[in-house]
Length: 213
Image (cartoon, rainbow, N blue to C red; front, side, top):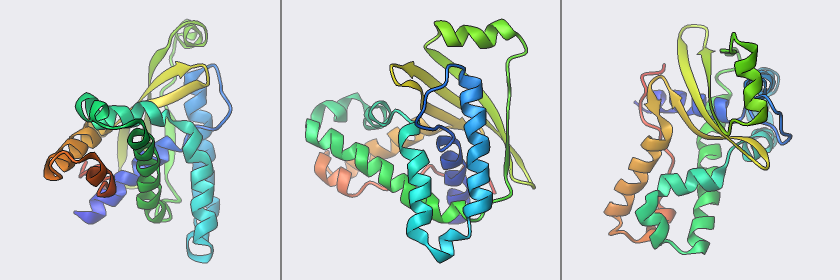
């Protein structure tokens, strides 16, 4: 079960790390171009996990941090009830905890997947592709992860803000990660008698078993 969890969590990070600091207008190119860059990192830098783990994790973090709307995602994971119960300081604390817990969990797993490839489903209609450059604020982009032995469908939910396109949710192999993390947070909060600070201290990201191996 633990092996499956790590494999599944790897897929999540592989997707999340697809986005760079700079903004691109076309969300399909935005996802695809940077997914390919991430594959290159996994292929060329995986040996750093053994020789210089700190540098390896930093390379992941440099890509990981700017690619997602962590404030929006963290609020969604906490859910309305616990978000309103939390102080502003606790909300900001959870954003950092959420980021760090994902990075720590994924870094070890990433080193095992240097041969994976990712393909993006581009719109066949040029107008459909271009309209997102002009006025659409929400978009779904689909990809396929090929590990060499299995293929897994991926769906990204992106939202366009003043800082460009950001991922706000991901569905991998039919599993909704946003909902999975939210359910985890709520269960943990209940087990901690709805003590927000205790919930934050005990948070560990776990996307569950999606059957990816």
